[in-house]
Amino acid sequence: MVIWPHVLSMPIYMALLLGIIVFFRKHYKLSAYFWLASLLTIPFWLMGNVDGWFRWAKILSVIIPTIIVGFSRIAVYEDKKGPIWNFLKSNKFLWFFYAILFLNIAEATIKDLTLGNYFNAACGFLLCVTIPFAPKFWKITTESYGDLVAYTTGSWNFIYTSWNACFVYAESPMYFASSVCILLAAELYPVIKKRPELYITARIYTLAAHLLLRACFDIFPLVMDSSSWFNPEVLKFWGMINFILIVPYVFWHMWQLHNDQAKYSFKRLKSA
Image (cartoon, rainbow, N blue to C red; front, side, top):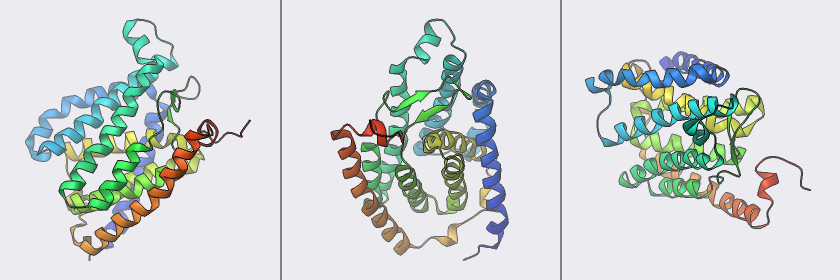
């Protein structure tokens, strides 16, 4: 197992991704237009870096919603008027972001099933079940930078990170190291800010940046190839651990909803 090149490349990439989160979170208007312009790079995608239905579904199901997130942030933060702007800033439209997150997890869960990674697939299914509902637990703020906020918990964020890392370990061992970077950057940012509800925003921008870079200039096999790290026994037990972790979380999640405590516990508010 060769790891020494990654000792340098992974921290550098993680620092870059953390900078990307900060930049696109702060510059909400530039973010919207940048990701819209990113579609002009599709000719690069066609040169062979994006192949197979899963890769095309993955990148389109990330880039297009990222564009929409940007324009929704503009609509809310600047209180834009007009039929399209009003639609983008309506509470009902928050279900779109919920659905995209659900779809993103479901895509990987289906792929996990085809790979025989059954315990991790079960974890993915339960992650879908425990996504906080829109619009009650989602919003775009009118302060700060017009943040897209999703009131996931720190525990849900951690399990999602571990589940997704396990999925990539099974599906693309070569890209496991680089994927760990984007997952850890998204995990660390809300921890640094002490705001777990920023996890989805961090995840959106790190994943979109990573997929765009891979689609245009796939340098990761050269600088961060982790194929030799794969071990089927690690994969099996990792999936089991993820499933074991999420089962009690599902019960806690449902208990919070049943007792009407979710409005406090998901948002980290004191009970009335």
